[in-house]
Length: 325
Ligand SMILES: [Zn+2]
Image (cartoon, rainbow, N blue to C red; front, side, top):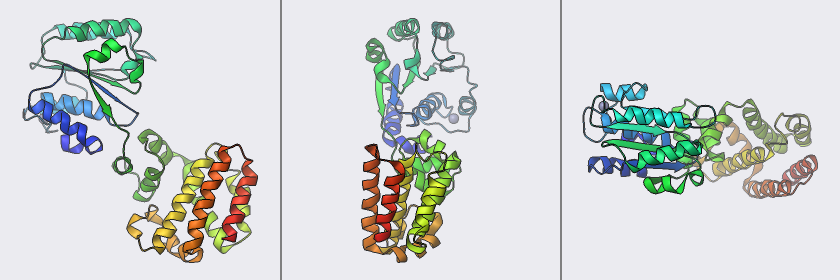
């Protein structure tokens, strides 16, 4: 249903209005980064076209909604690259299919994923199809690379730009996937790319980094010299230490910010909500001023590492500064 498309509310409202006012275009091009909700909206639009309730929305209950959800509706076609490209034969098959009258209704919809992956022949064939659209046909092309499409194809489509998701939208998606709230919030604080977020929550090294951040913070205020041991024996030996050090430092900043938020009485803003006891304990030991300075130190460290500073020396230096407070 349109109301479930919370990630791209404005686009959902726009498409809902268009179908309710009987003003659907012949062809749409949904353009946006991976995970920005293009496919979900495309199928939602298809369901809204075919839903037996005919009220401009999908009901998710009727035969048509269900068949679209399971990929079994005879008048809804989904095309995606075979191997790495969309080939001319796929477009020809589509055209042949669409030259028959719609099987069950006045409409036919095709959704083409990764439309920029069409071969030149395929794109030219599609262009003909877009120029003389059979009655009742709605084309929905999806792309992450709008600039790779022929301008002539672009000019035939209503272009709908999908903005990257907000952190709330990423969070909502991760929770929907079944990710625990604490991990979901931390991940959403670090990336606005849903595919990347999904990869992070699955990665062992990411879970390990999270634990290491908490341990390092504890070592710094509780166990003095052990903080350096944690850097040497754990962080620098971790599988992704060199490649993903930025992410480790981002996690550390988020953690220190949580400690500070706790001290400021803004607990509802805390990201690592599954670590409240530890946050409570560590925050008091760190103290407000030291946390503010500490976050600055970590950000400076990130900056230095982006200029090819030596990883080990730079991290050691950071720990010493954090300890001085
Ligand atoms: Zn329905």
